Structure formats: structure tokens, C-alpha cells
Image (cartoon, rainbow, N blue to C red; front, side):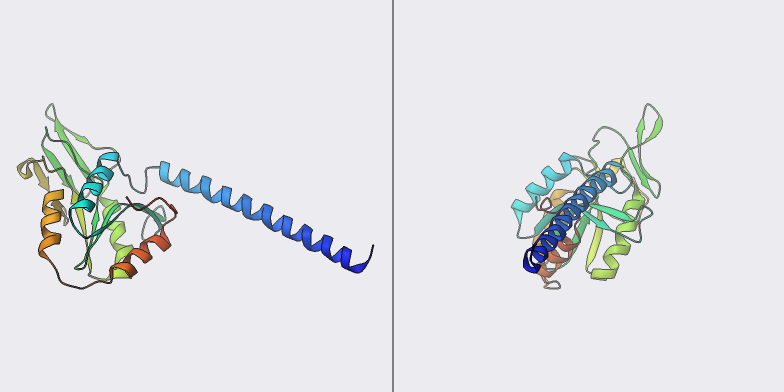
Length: 209
């Protein structure tokens, strides 16, 4: 066996090992992301939220993203899921998962959402105010004051039903659209903002709704 043949075999073996390592690493990352997402400790996005975002995207020139999972040192679990992000010229609207209950009185406080049913306050699953607080840390580092975290509510909800004790505004799809259309200030470079979210997104190829 000459030197050239030996070198070729060694290099081929190294390339095969590298390929196997890459495949194993990709499988590990995929499994890890699924476990993180399904833990329900970082955020939650319902189909209703995605449907509303699609409608909003058709009403104006804003760019809409959903299900953006990022590493976040400000989160207890080190990750944050952005349910909805609406990027327009004036600012970024970061939306919570949609609140849809139209029959009962609702209280939103620092511990989450509580719905009054049969004279008892029942905490809503998979919705935490703390998730919104953790988003702010990640957003501040990248966008300073050019964003607002919003509690996203169904347009059929009567605001008199809601006792909002948090620092976040409650807005529905119509209010958001109206505010976007009215504010034409050019404070942001939309493409750069989109790029920041997509580059940090751990759910590659599944964010633009």
C-alpha cells in the first residue's frame, strides 16, 4: 500500500467520522428542542393565536412571525418562546398567546390568568405573566425601547370582563391593526429586525406564519 492510498483511506475515515458526529449532533438538537418546547415552562402558542396572526398579516404591511424559540439568559429555564411578533416601521409588538374566554370574568396579575367560574377563581393553564417579563430582558438587549409586549385578547372579549393588574396593555387584532396603520414613524429597519429573530430562532424553517 503506497503513501497516497494510505492517506486517502485515513482522510476518508476522518470524513466519515465527522459526518456521523454531525448527524448525531443534529438528532440530539432536534430531540432537545422538542423536549424544551413540550415542557410548557417557556411559553405556549395555540392554533387560535396563529390564525389571528395570519389575519393580521393580511391587513397591513407589518411582518408577522410566530413560534420563535430563543435561548434567553433572563429566563429561569434559559429559553423563551415568542408566540407572536409583529414588526412594523414604528416598533415591534410582541404578543402573548391569545386569551379567548368570552363568557367569564378574567383577572390578569403577576401570577398569571384567573377565570371566574362558578364563583371560584381558576388559574388558566399554559399562560404565565412571567413569560412576558422574561421576554423583556431578551428584547431590551437587542431593541432597547422600540418594542412593546402586549397581552393579546380576542376581539369578542369585552374589556369590562378583564381586570388587568399588570403593566402590559390588552389589545385585540382590530386595535393592533388600527394602531399600526396610524403610526407611520420610521424607527426601525424591518429587515434587520426580522434577521435578528430568525438567526436566533431554534425552530429553523418554521416561523413565518
